[in-house]
Image 1: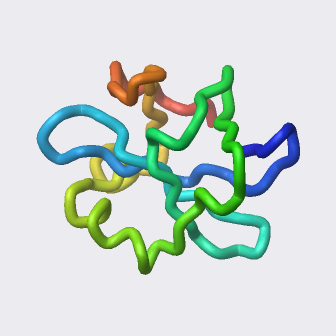
Image 2: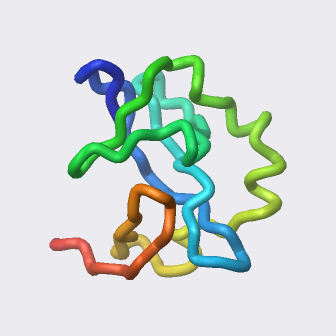
Length: 100
């Protein structure tokens, strides 16, 4: 995940709506080793990465209880070796295995 091309952290999971196959947000492991939540509507998908306009968009996971209650972890649903294919509107079109 980047801001103006500068790496802020890496996405380690996707929170998925429990009812429809849509991304609600991302679990981001930041450079300070803290996990933060990025709501999907605030992210800009850019090729193989995610861009944001401000680091202030990242929310401490303790403050993201609403999203966690409404979502499942993609990692819990499909295991560590799966990667979601997410469209710009958040729809998850499929799961592709990650190369080892």
